[in-house]
Image 1: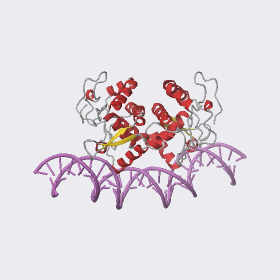
Image 2 (image 1 turned 90 degrees about the vertical axis):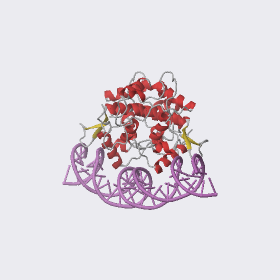
Image 3 (image 1 turned 120 degrees about the horizontal axis):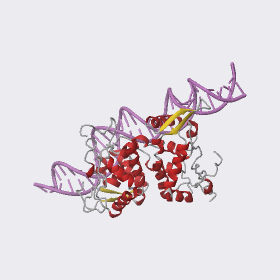
Image 4 (image 1 turned 60 degrees about the vertical axis):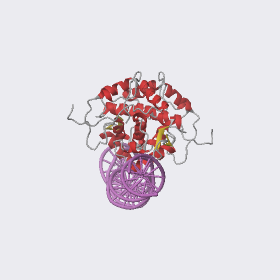
Length: 175
Length: 175
DNA sequence: ACCTGTTGCTTGCAAATCGCAAGTTTGATT
DNA sequence: AATCAAACTTGCGATTTGCAAGCAACAGGT
């Protein structure tokens, strides 16, 4: 092991944190991953209209980078030849704990649109939540786990969590 | 609760993930936080020479942003009036789970300079590790928890973890 | 076959940000 | 006083971003 450096060309350091940031350390990448992971989004158009207002050139660039890093994979839509389906790979769904901790940190320390009860549930049941997110990914369940938080009316916290936490009786409306 | 929007001016969305990225969603902020959290760095010079090669203007800017977000706080050095001591606030040390998950993800999926045994230990003992990091912060213990991973020789995994995991018998050499 | 709308991009360009080198300022050392 | 060091700031060219527009491939209706 003496001669061989662990460092790839162009890499700033071998620190794992640094490499993570090299992959998705920007304003948009993790938002796209969040959309795929918890909202069930799969197409360019869905990401574009996701609410944060990403420009289409940036979106295309980020999807390409994530694909190059094998965090997402693409396939053509069987039903509609115009569409491209973007999916998280296993490497991508493995970012669920990162997203989860970002979610919990901001809920605790910043003023957000996320209802407290839901965040408290998630914070107290990390493992259950992660397993549910992972299950949906494995089974290709398109049902969003968390709906986008409304910016104005944060009152109705009950209908944020998609599906049923314990048993999942049936699916809700799609879209 | 109807009238008041949760959204601050200039904010892209009320989603906690988005707000987190607004605070530290760039190439450098989390590296600085990592340096403070696990390496015990506290001064401008230490961050600058941290190994990733950050430019001084960017470093100054990021430290200011993090201070404005109350993730770090500053105080003058008692012993040397030129120096400024940067410390994580409670809000800042609360980012430990985020850093930890970034570390574990890249260790699992990318080629890094981090020794496998250490990462396996950390992955299997998240809670213990987090508590130790937090303890060091609370007690102002300047002993680094993780030393910078050497890019070339990754052989000596035994001396990466600073101090003793169970009881901490005594401190090792500093830097 | 033709027309219209949709989807997933690409292109052009101005504005913001970054990265590097070189100062400047304040305080410690000699 | 002279020198050095730490923490920034400033200038400037290069890169990246944001916004608008354009475009090719496809779908659906007539």
